[in-house]
Image (cartoon, rainbow, N blue to C red; front, side, top):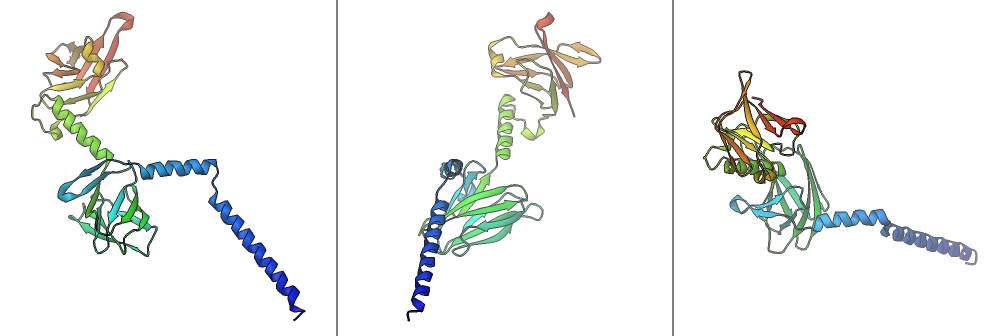
Length: 274
């Protein structure tokens, strides 16, 4: 009995030391330095920020991709249909809680333009986890929440490049003066070269007229003079100004815009590429 007492005491001391060391390491792991705290703050702001959410067809909830971390709410015994862009190929789906969340793939659409759907199902309410989806085009970072009764049946995304394209089409229709020309029939294949404070921001044609859009400041000053290059000569053609838009009653191939005289003269060249 007495022979084992020192051994027992030694073992107890070692165990106590190990517990102390483990507790110390745990405390160190929980503390954050300045850079780590700043990183956590940036990530927290991105995750917690309220972004643009709109309604799509058939009640689909639309998030603007890349603006914030989307928060998708699902419910037990229901499914959330997360639809990606048509033609996008999913590489990996990583979920923080793979035990209580199930994600299954599905497809829709014709071959060659199929859209991938991720069918998300939680096993119980009150859960919060994260999901990362890597595809052939982008990476999605999504927060998943489960609610006892509420859920988002369909979820999809708008993509900045698509929004910009649609906005350009709308602007083009407006800038043509409501002529009713479909945006797909407009030709934007013009190059603009030269330097000037009034340098055109956009040039396009509907096949009959040419539209030259200037910065807003041109609306309050004299517009430059337009010369159309034809047969090796510069000639003046009919045009009119509508705010900061020059509308030329001619399908321009090459043109020169000139403002000022002498050393202060500014010149911009316009040429159709195709």
